[in-house]
Image 1 (cartoon, rainbow, N blue to C red):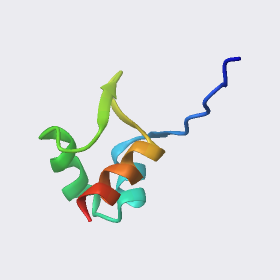
Image 2: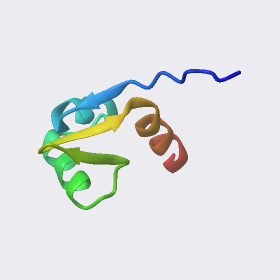
Image 3: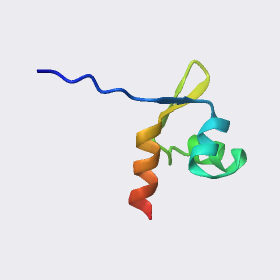
Image 4: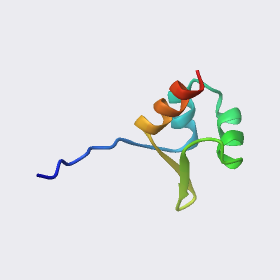
Length: 60
């Protein structure tokens, strides 16, 4: 049996910044350097909420 995994996508650098608790300026810097688990789609940054949280839990 296959389970459908629901992933919540977060669109835009400012929304990503809110989730990770950083300023938009710092967040965009991290995104551009490839230091966050996110991709650019159609000119906008997109990330999976669970991956962002897991990324920061590992770093803590």
